[in-house]
Length: 255
Image (cartoon, rainbow, N blue to C red; front, side, top):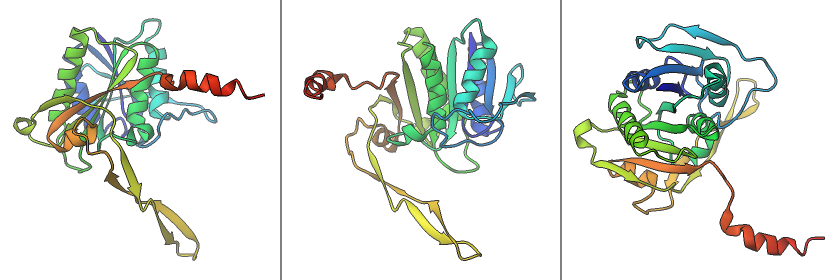
């Protein structure tokens, strides 16, 4: 297999190193990742400046690694182009520092990178660890990412989705198992803190605290809080099909 790996925390981040080690068991690994951290880049592309790509030494043997001066989505698109005319067999993004659940999925550069694989009908996973600690161990999350990849490959899982995986920050023997979940709902309160710079001018720093709205145990955030790995299938197609008929009817009266 040819495996394309990316992230949004930067090419030398410990999470991507652990992920590359694990995924090397499946085949040839190619890394295309941002040269610096690009967290919360969402699905942005770089349009106003050229992108530079540089092959760099990497901590995992037999892995080709390229640092890209762009967003996570840029990285995967360039990686797909690099591997052309054949597509990669698997796209994996992560391991992210911190969870990517609930509405955070929409802001995540990690999840956006995985979407680029789904757009070309390649099996695509995003893997995140529920911890922001600087010295956290990503080995357990990497093992779960590999377990999920193996099972999805074995069962010929539908390639039109992104499989969003979140792993609790627990010792391996304390993880209760894996749950298939839906996207949960949280609300950020106290979103921006106003401060004043040395020149007396105000500026703002994002500082929202998440509050869980949906207590359903089948939500991603609640499953992880309960000690389970969460896997959520995310639609590549954003169309709300349940509204199509009523919207057509409504639009008949628009002149």
